Length: 206
Ligand SMILES: N[C@@H](CCC(=O)N[C@@H](CS)C(=O)NCC(=O)O)C(=O)O
Image (cartoon, rainbow, N blue to C red; front, side, top):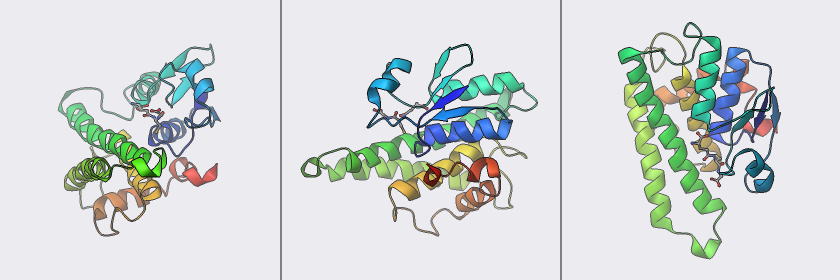
């Protein structure tokens, strides 16, 4: 398998962490959307990352679909999301908050990094950032204060994605999260970093 995309993308990174946690052998081709759009477009018509090229050449697009496939491969006993019922619904709700926060952070980040400076729209930036931080606040409120995980007794996709997004905001929009804003999410990110499967994917490695 080959994972397409750079680890700065929270969607690529959560996919890489999940591949590592689940023990899949996978290469990575760090194509960037700003520089390698045409090459990415050959795999994903939307020209977005991540994409996952399977050994038989099939290409999966979108981290949600890729992670669903990985969970299916390992089966319900090792899957990173609960299989059904209220546990799955709870996990999916929290995951939607984390993924949504990632999406809105990308919007705010692109407003700064991709627009010509004289066309920067501060209200749009503030609105997107506000939505991202509101999602993070909801995750903070849902996080256990006893050193547990966000969705159930074991580490799950919710913890992986939340920790990735927490770090992503701090990397691309430094100073927007105060050290004391989300202490429980900060603690989850710290615990995730104790795992090589997570710490080895820090965007600075490439
Ligand atoms: N829903 C998608 C979102 C993927 C996404 O937006 N990726 C960004 C990188 S962080 C991208 O490819 N952006 C380029 C663009 O939208 O032009 C997923 O979960 O994979």
